[in-house]
Image (tube, rainbow, N blue to C red):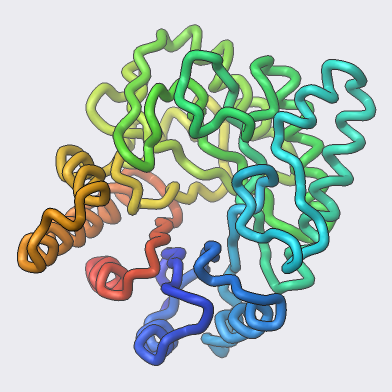
Length: 330
């Protein structure tokens, strides 16, 4: 059976029997790990080894969000080092550019070496989003700064470090998440900035990084840019993704950001956000109905992501009924 271009999360620190039966008979491209999957170093290596050996003819890619700072699924004592957020290197860049670039390269080399020892292939980094003082804190200190050239310099050094250690660098969130005034995990950001301004700022970063010889992957932003498509977020927009490929010049593999994020699910997403805050107010029947509606929306979003031009779709919840529904639908 041919593998499908899906990246799934799993539910916990071991593969359940149901997950094992489903996944071993339904090949996918990769897995993404979260804190819920990590208990100890030995347990994690065992889990990753099992995931890597699910299929006889290839090894699925193992991803994890390990940017440093507050987005780091791996923490001591699982690994030895608590890596700094991108903001640390941005501040260093202002004092000593050469030292900052050297430090970033070394940081991401060692970080990636940590991951490789565990069997992980990609840290889902670097974040290439510009930082703005008036926007949502979802990016914040994850950004390498607010200047285009500074971001390009520091991201390029991070890419070099990841690649030098044999890892897969992923620039995110193409074509730029920095102007979002809300968190796309919870609701859909809408950016009304003029195209020329975007091309001079957010898009310029990704345009330059797309030329980097060691960049082959990018992760899409769940954001509506009026300048590209006023109705659909980038992940679901053929117009926006064609722009990324043709005008920004990214020719590598595009992976969706997590399709479980409520930005992609319109009014249902808003309802889901509210539901997560008020679960105790729902009856079992209401919760079951809402979740089935969400599964139907996930199926639609999966179809739209592929139709728009994403090469891979990432689903991270680890909820098996969602995974089965998505797999069977494509």
